[in-house]
Length: 249
Image (cartoon, rainbow, N blue to C red; front, side, top):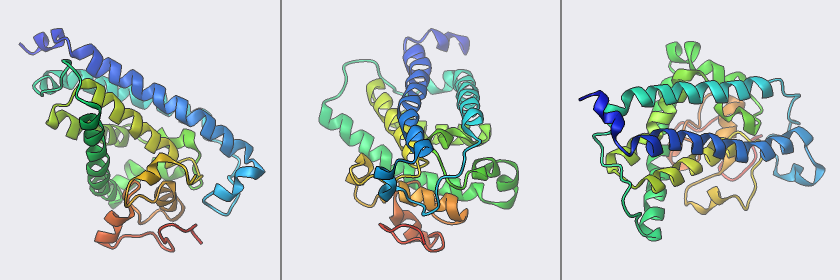
């Protein structure tokens, strides 16, 4: 019965398809944003978040290796967990209306950011920080390619968190894919080192765009939510010197 779950027609699109789309989306988003950070064009410097020039980056090759390794690790875990995931109501039937799909993705954006706060703050406990999260904090001045530069356990936790609301709600696979693409945009933008005013992340009330997470890398402590400053405001955990909408001093 356990192995029969792999005959489920949802297995390939949900597990393999979602992984492929996630990896492709990150590559498409991160490549040009990393090029911008590497070139540091004068015309875009006004959008650079940190006043210091992006340092000569030694993490590009290792970030690509982490991106590949972490995604393969997560794929293996999801394949192993598929008999449990198959019990969900993830769907392949007719997709929902555009309005419903957008509403579901927007809900996931807010729910994920709130839940991420708790997971991320937990990763800053002494044991987990020393053995897991410190890998990601090798990065002080982020480049987009470093968005997946983290310990496999942290990557798996982040991935599981992203899958949780979609799995519990039992959305159509197209909605899951749309959500995953957006999540990879967040991973890219949050580590790009730039805050562009026309970024779609600024369309969401409460979002401070890339500035919020960039301040976390600069200060290490505080700003545990991804993009939404109000979450850290609720718990009194703003990073030192962080003011929403302003560059970090």
